Image (tube, rainbow, N blue to C red; front, side, top):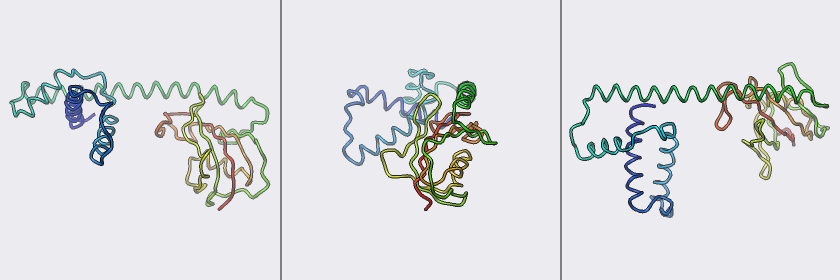
Length: 231
């Protein structure tokens, strides 16, 4: 977390305090463009500042904001402030790294167990890459290649059943076979048009240690895919 972000948090704290004095944020109107834009700015700021939640001395923050707005001289000299803010930023970063590594370790353990259990199920086949797939409904059409565009329905979940993406209930998705994660691309190229497969994708041919959005680091992914057509 950078110093600029910390200053933004102080500003947010002041706004929150003012909001509390005026009756709270839940009753704020969100009808005009200015109100909706203000809400959006608040949402963005809140998301960026979430790692510092519960770690700040709010009274000290508010004092700093008040002094800055009033044009008062700093109550702490600049060198001490810089040292303290750098140390604070480092502490938050270290905690975030530790939390992410703990999540990655959990995902690796749970993912390995899930892959082992799933591989033992009747009807599950495993490719050289480690991709596991099960034919739910066989198709009779052609199989797409890496350069093809396809239309399909799909539902993606984590090993605990959490859904992270789905086209079910809406229009079919359309994208390039070669433009998705390696495991998904491989699965599509195994499927004849009209088929429905259940695939389990190890993390190293999914999003790996990087993760993506709500998909954490080293997560195993499960998809049900129905290939509708090659476009």
